[in-house]
Image (cartoon, rainbow, N blue to C red):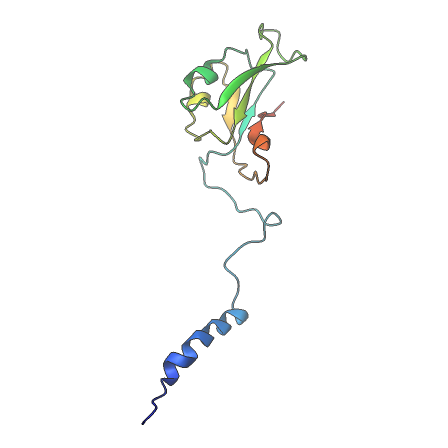
Amino acid sequence: MKWSVDLKGTLSPLSILTAFWQKPNTIAYPAVKKETAKGYRGFHTNFLADCIGCANCQDVCMNDAIDMIKTDKEYNAKNASQCIPRIDYGRCCWCSLCTDVCPPDSLKLEDDYLNVTKYASDFLYMPKNKE
């Protein structure tokens, strides 16, 4: 009986060892942050000094990702309801409708996009206050 050895087939799994001497394709998270493209829709920011608490953002949100919460602090004298938006990023689809319907233009999307957590409650997010 004759044995035939397929040397190429036997050694081909070892070709992965060449990857040890190549530059990695990944980036070190969170030490290195990639630049976002122009017009990228990241996390929300809210200029609370301009927010009037109208809840248009909540009404237009098709995923019910925005709810208005009452605050003790008065950010704007025109905000009679003393409510500001809170966004559930577990539901948000970053469609930007909330920013389009904001009358004082206080709600914006910025280029910040990192939110890694193991707790679902951490996705309830108060937009950053930009003053």
